[in-house]
Length: 198
Image 1 (spheres, rainbow, N blue to C red):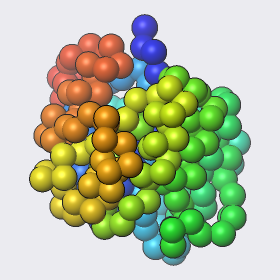
Image 2: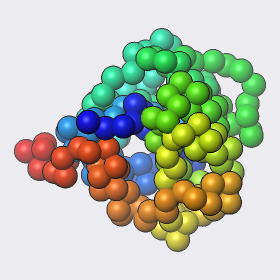
Image 3: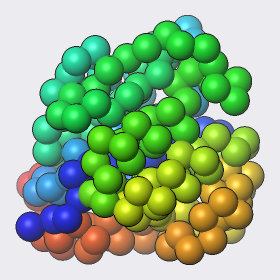
């Protein structure tokens, strides 16, 4: 049984490619709900969830306010809303931008660390700013675990480099190995998504 109640993933510049690589490697039995914050325009459509759904046997949804958090699901923060983890469900707010972003990775990560102390897995992927570094630090301070994409494997190294500066004890994992690493950490079976989808 996994020790984690939620995995929160933050990405910005280059995030679509990185998230695609990540979710396509997750098996059908991946036991931890995954909440994804991808920086995008306030007017962005909901194509991100559709694009990722084509790559994974897990359910991929745009979060709605008060949406329950359930295993086997990848939750996408909607454009122009902060997504907060609030016990067993998500809350959406239109509070002011944080580091020029809404949704903010820091907001989601901080709320997850508070909702599930010691049971939150924080993952920072590629990005061109430093959003997420404070939230990742908060997750670790609350007893959770931090994973950062190897900056050398990132389309933009700024975000993972900032995360490593804030959380030097974070595990550094190349993008190509990220899904397998999460599978191992969460105790799910090491079957690939492709095998489980057949």
